[in-house]
Length: 385
Image 1 (cartoon, one colour):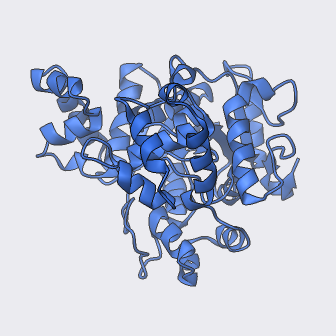
Image 2 (cartoon, helix red, strand yellow):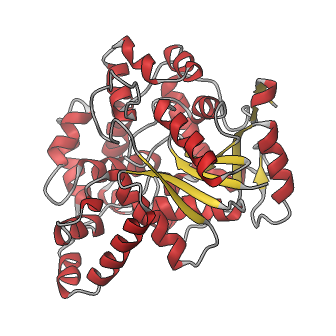
């Protein structure tokens, strides 16, 4: 069975994701479409609008298999996010990896990778690294003449292809050009109803019912019947976590650099909401997204030592169709990691971070679903099994 992997967040699953899934299947002539999806928290350092079980149920209407991207990868910047997703795709024996991009051209993406590789050997690059600037920011400053670095999806596409090339993987990279709304467009597309997840979340939290037009029916029903979450729902818990922590404890948190623990302890005291807090922390050196990722790691107590040399020890399946189930059986013996459909006491040690994140998320949302009582959702049966 030929398979194509999609590295996703589905926050929430919308019409653009339907287009991507169907286009990927057709372009690669695949029998099985596999989504490697972020769990409770996302790459932008935000709580997902809905828990991973509901988002997996949305997605499985259009793909054949949904597995969880490990938390360490899901809350990291593009290079580690891409590494984790590609790594899982390789272990699942996927023939192709399909991703959205503003470019829509693999050769352009490969050309950009070559330019970036040359720049990393430049003295200017090394000097800026020593100044504390991030890799993406340096590249954006040094390669200002290329359109490929202006799109969020292009930047992620570069990381996917780079990881495949550097590790000489057999996965074929394929890109689908984004249409209509771009990744961070804040407003709904009222013409084609292919809108960005950002605009859909904005409309949802502003109580604008027209966001439903940008979602397939199942997604619309699940989201409208749920209480979506954002950072403000977690702010009180975040504030308590920071106030109770010592500077020494905060210094151990993943992405806590250059004395940020002092700034965070100072600014949290008089901040009354999450937006106010991040505005007080933001500077030219630290982007909003970078700070959100750091605060996610702080909330979840993810330490630098937890991330260094991290390797997943199992693959968690969240949802599957009967075709997806057949695919798992066909590759089970070739997969180097255990494939887990039901988390129990024996398998829980594989997913320590993911279970912790789910429990914290569900505590705030009030949902009763946990990693232990939510076995894999099987689409064709219409329930968890």
